[in-house]
Length: 411
Image (cartoon, rainbow, N blue to C red; front, side):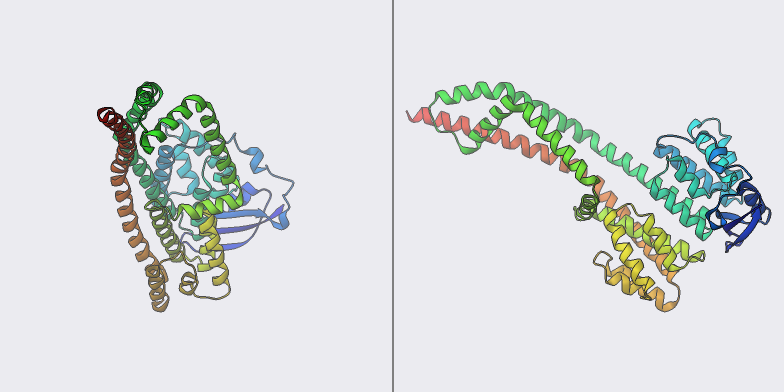
């Protein structure tokens, strides 16, 4: 007989913790379910694993491998949210998804998750063990388990995944025409500079006229690419690898994540998305009984951007020291004054969660507007870049030809 430390949520969503005696982790889990408690975490007391009973990792089936596609993840999240909202417990809900015949990946995922949940693992721990779910997704699920608001968090994640898939679809559709134009322009320029320009250069050199600077520069670039195209390829590959290696370092990731927030339009989209998630997650956790400090800590773990995570670490430290959330936000250069005012009003009225929900709706609207602006600008910007490049080449050659012709006439 062993002792287990547990945290679980009741049917009313209240968080309970304590010690339970059982021969194995699976038996302890069944005792908690019999008491109408939903386990959040279940760990051996004093870190010792009892000798009797199966080991959860050993009894689990072969876990799913690789990544799950966005569409499969959305389907899994939506269906699980609907089942939990209808009143089903987690294990029966996973069993229903496992019984689906048309989604082989989801059957495999649900089977592995259900086995680990039955053996006493929390849902977030089961998700992390499989390796097919992102750290952001797992951290948000852990926050939902802690708050007893797993259906709400799943619904929020489903909305987020829907938005991401729709954004990718819009960007792909918006890039079709510019991609065709860009590819055709690159092919024509390659043919012109590698085959036609050298012949034209010979003719222009026979006139004896001094060509304009732009024409001479274009001819020099054409000759360089013609002789050292392999060197250009190696340099580009080397630069790409160097950037990839730098991006994987802690300092590089921090620097790049900070720079990406300053990119026009794209940085605004990322910022609006983060602020909407920040407000909505804290509001959901607060409404379900999680303290502000714990909510900030959970959201910090669920944040993928290293720079924003560093800001959240400082935010958690200030709140832990007793500072109001509004004061901590104002000391950070990232959080806008409007959000600080919303939080201040919520703190003064005693309805911080409601105020954060209003902030989430505000930044959701701003995020949708930024996305619409981004997709609307993709086509004209791509075409403009191609037009400028082609126009520059045409201008350089035409001025060179006109200069040569005018020199011949003057003779």
